[in-house]
Amino acid sequence: MIEFQNASYSYIKGNGVNNLNVKIDEGEFAFLIGPTGSGKTTLMRLIYFDLIPDAGMVIVGKYSSSTITTRKIPGARRGVGMVFQDYKLLGDRNLFENTALPLHALGFPGKEIVDRVEEALDLVGLETKSEHLPMELSGGEQQRACLARAIVKEPDILLADEPTGNLDPVASFELVRLLETINEMGTTILMASHNYNLIKGRGRRILEIKNGTLRGS
Amino acid sequence: MDKIHYLISEGFKNIWRHKMTAFTAVFSLFLALFFVGLMATAGENTHKILQYLRAKYKIEVFFDQDVANEKALGLIHQIKKINGVRTVTLIEKEDAMRIFKDQFGEDILEILGYNPLPVSAVINLVRASKFPVKADPIVNKIKTMKGVAEVRYQGSLIRKIERTYYRILGKLPVIAGIVVLVAVLVIYNTVKLSVYSRRQLILTLEMIGATRTFIKMPFIFEGFFIAILSSSIAFPALVGTIETGNYILANFTSWGIRLSFDPVIWIWLFVLSATITILGSYRAIAGILK
Image (cartoon, rainbow over all chains, first blue to last red; front, side, top):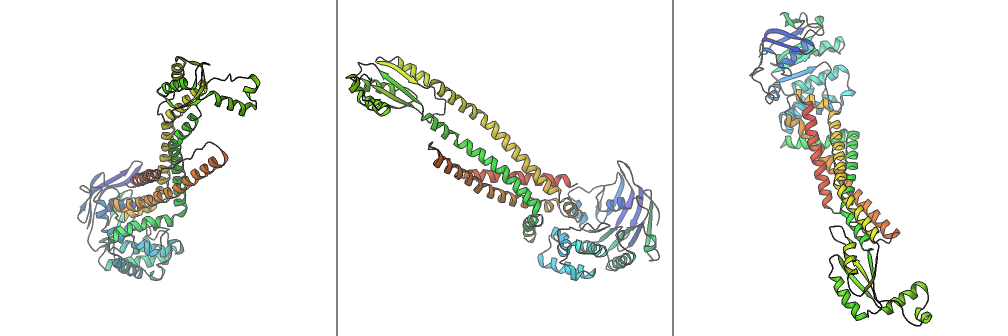
């Protein structure tokens, strides 16, 4: 599903990732752990083709970084859902509109959009808050809203970049449980975190990244 | 169909969601269009002012004492043929005497016992010429005619008016060009700022897999609506300003000038604002998208 083949990327000011070789299988739930600045976000950005490796290759489903063009990137991203530490919800739209956004972008018909959004909000436990604006929600709720927006299009892959970074331990735990539920439905998940206590003992593969290099899995 | 409906409705909703930004954009566009419209209207009406001034141009020709009315009519016929002459009015000896009495309150016939005033003529020059009206060649031609005693005219004043008008006319395209350029820059930058203030939306849409067209279309529709809105406000404001000007001209001056306004200007204003807002939105988004 996701494969890094000797993939490297460096920013103008340094850092980035070096010679990554890893494969994440379809339906797998893997954690990516490492300190701040270790390259977790860079690795994630390489998966959704926000960055293209300087060397090597990243393969995501049927798309490869070596052949992908700017025009094909939206297509590649349609199969990938993303959850961010800072939520990236649009403050001028309510929860329903935020969640429906990917479906509008994909051209779903109106009736199906309503059904899917209700289903996604129901899954993350926000079905009663669909009319609320993001600022009217708690941090945990905003992160779950972000998750609803990521899963509403039923992506093959879900990337969660430090999704618990701004949450308290209880909300963090609930979010990981939610991700596990989504994984059970067949979605491949890669979650980046620097909180080892949150992910240990879950029986999932943990990829450790340090100074841009994968140390082990 | 759902997608197109969504993109158009998003264009509308964006105006409502970002009322202050939209208001700033509409207001800036309105001001820019208003000044461009005023400039266009001024350009369209300058010839009326010139025509008004040209109507005041007058050449007075006094014939010799021995030239009777009949002979004067023959001379007038010749004068009428001169290029640049619009009308020639004969003032017979009796008319001259009446005018004298009207102006000075004295009957010259009673004072002197005879009428010493010569037959004369008043010449009006063409008003609507596209080229500068030159009185000197006309005057010189008249002076060479046998039976003409004296020619009086406002030579330097006519030269000054004609020179000033054609100087203004020559600079008008430059001034109009500057006004349009400033308007274009104001509109373009307003649109760019408006788009940039919603950078987060564009980046989020990009990340969720929206195509470039899908990201750009609501902004382009929004720009289009703003263009309609601002030109729709600019048009009545222009008409109102011109009508106010006409009211002042009609009630407080005797110039007899009525400013006209070509409704086609509205179409031009709309085309100008729509082109710049759409182009501005398109380029601003392209700058944000990777």
